[in-house]
Amino acid sequence: MKNLDSQYFGIDNYPISEINASMDIKNSVKVTSIKPRLNLARQGKDGTYPLVIQIIRNRRKRLLYTPFRLYKKEFHLKKEIACNQGHIRKRMVYIRKANEYLVYICKELENIREMLEAKKDLFTVDDIIQIFGIQNNMSCLFTFADYFIHKLKDEHRYGTAANYQNAMNAFLNFIKDPAYSFDQLSFSVIEEYATYLKKQKCQPNTVSFYIRHLRAVYNKAIKEGIVRNNTAPFKNINLKELKTLKRAITKEEISRILQLETTGTYRALGLAKDVFIFSLSTCGMSFVDIAYLTKDNLQGDYLCYSRKKTGQHLQIKIEPLVEKLLEKYADPDSLYLLPLLRKNDTYEGYRYIQRCLNKHIREIGKILGFVFPLTFYVARHSWATLARNEGIPTAIISEGMGHTSEKTTLIYLSQINQQIINHANQLVMRCWS
Image 1 (cartoon, rainbow, N blue to C red):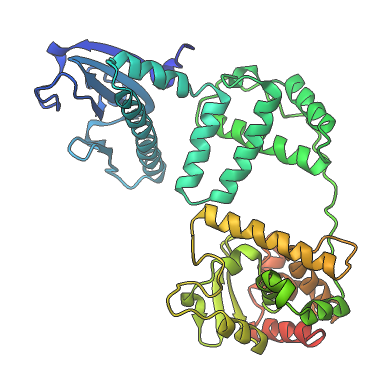
Image 2 (cartoon, rainbow, N blue to C red; image 1 turned 45 degrees about the horizontal axis):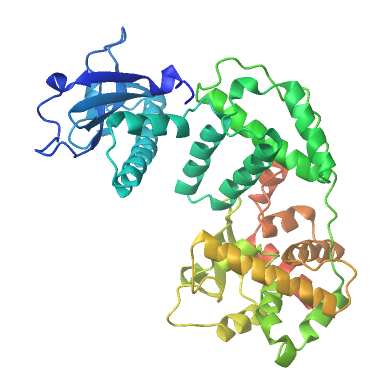
């Protein structure tokens, strides 16, 4: 077992004589107690105490130290959580992080306890500590990344979590060491990693994607105080990206998609076709936003929603073609407007239907003889291109699509009248429908 990082997982060992009488030991020596506590025996000069996890089993007590220190008034003993006692924002954020950490670490310890109990073998508090130490040495890059990824999932940021997981899997395939520490990361290692990815025939954008996410994990560890000797391994790494080929289709090609009969042989492709047309008819609404549209997003003659990617609130006037599609898929027993998440609205369910429809929309492109892959993003890009060809200003196009990347554009966009955006969408639809 690797040595535990003393800043994060220091351990104290106490005989039963020192256990507070209020601890839940019951009469059975086989009961395992896992509780957050303050170690009041170690008061700091600033009056704070270490926040620890107290583990008791078979009349032995061990303490696992967390990265956090609290004032006595900041820990609620009965609720076993940190609590804010002031209005200082920095301290409020610190308390929130402490509680997030407690949830994570206690869940990990409970999982280890359940795993050991399931084996029906005798085990001690030291066995729990040992397994936890192997799995949770935060100086290990992959352990910290796992902790970070779990936090993203807890925040329901599943797509972002999946991106980080893919990046970590790629680096693990290269480094071949699950216990690899942050201290081992250097400029030469990153250079070798970039070379390795290129030999694996990864495209420049893929190489950049993996290294940027690895760098983000490293920077997060610096911010959390885990990396104390920052050697700046990414400082001189040149991450060149190629501009992604943006493929827009013509009015004639859109008409061919509209005219494709999705019955009989092509019946399975019907939903993919309708989602594509739905996107074209709603200012290029993205697939994920379409999937999560609910009846609450229907407000009079408008679809009102917030973009999953940016959080920007958008209002799209419901045109006749959109209304027709909503009527076609109306289901009084479902919360969702379209049948994408009706059977399974978990992230895994979303990813499954996304893969299925991506496959179907590509198949439609092949049937129609398109020389490029047809994707749902093509609908989004086509709306923007057709709008530009109709003479619609870029600022209005950006607002209609929910873009928020340019500050100067955002300042101007806030003054654009909603009717102008609706008119722009109507112009685009008129040129192909």
